[in-house]
Image 1 (cartoon, rainbow, N blue to C red):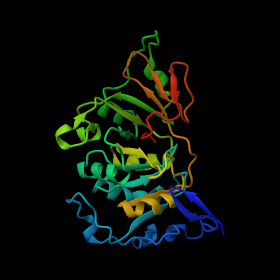
Image 2 (image 1 turned 60 degrees about the vertical axis):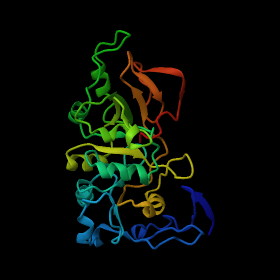
Image 3 (image 1 turned 45 degrees about the vertical axis):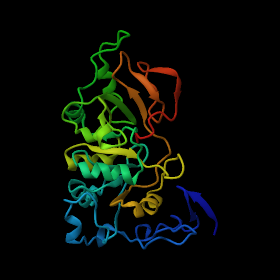
Length: 302
């Protein structure tokens, strides 16, 4: 058995998904003693305490453990995510798959859930968050929409965008009044909080993610799941549960290990579509890239 670093912790590589018999019932400890016991709960064994359903307080009770749901990446058993949708609507913070990396999400309209998401994933106050949308209707509701053209004579930018979505792209658009201010605010103290005028939007091309968004019937606020100690994405949902279970995460939806490649970020609020970060989505002819464009860009976008 060998030890290898993953997500800022050291885990036993010979046990990690080697047999995949009961991954939802296993936790992977570091070589240091754990701070407290954890329990990963499979969907078939879920027995939520009534106390867990009282979400009036900004913090959740963790007495009944982390909900861990394994689903087929094709979405064939999407019914398994029904308890997850129920928890999200009641204020939970959890992790779901996208067509790029795993995303930590919460209800876009739940103030306390948004604050918990920022705390759990240690999102910097100046770091913007994105919203995952089920359709263009959601984008039209929470933003002012895509520009009609570009400064370079491209008249029908919306038609071009439709060829990219659903897909691995995050588009930066002007936020509408329908988007809660908590989704775009930044600052260090309550008195200094201000709101951005823009928000990143995504329509992921992932069957499981789309099933959750369809059942939610509204977008989810999201940020990519990264190691708390290293500037790298965590691709294995088992490791995500192990790392963030102690931080207050409520559930993880396991749809297999992702590929470490985030979405391509494109700014749409200027005179032309600006390629901010090159990711999984290929650069389109109508996107303008600056010389200093890197693969990092807005690291909060999944």
